[in-house]
Amino acid sequence: MLLDQYPQLSFDNHCYLRIGLDNLVKAKWDTLISRSPYKHSSEGQRDELIKLLMS
Image 1 (tube, rainbow, N blue to C red):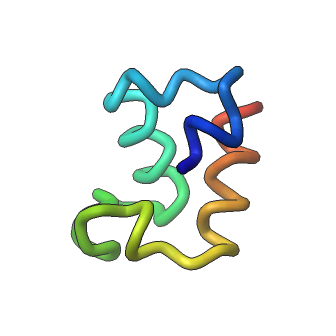
Image 2 (tube, helix red, strand yellow):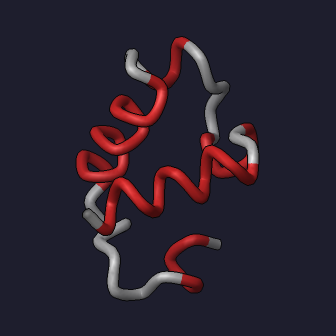
């Protein structure tokens, strides 16, 4: 799970994660990635999301 791997990021705030996902796909994330994004996103998308959340 991302929270376990990156405890310094605020994954407890779902709004923070949702904004990151929206920015990642340049749209409302759930129109392009099925729910749960952890399960349905690619490894590349997850890597890019982490970069976005850390910047």
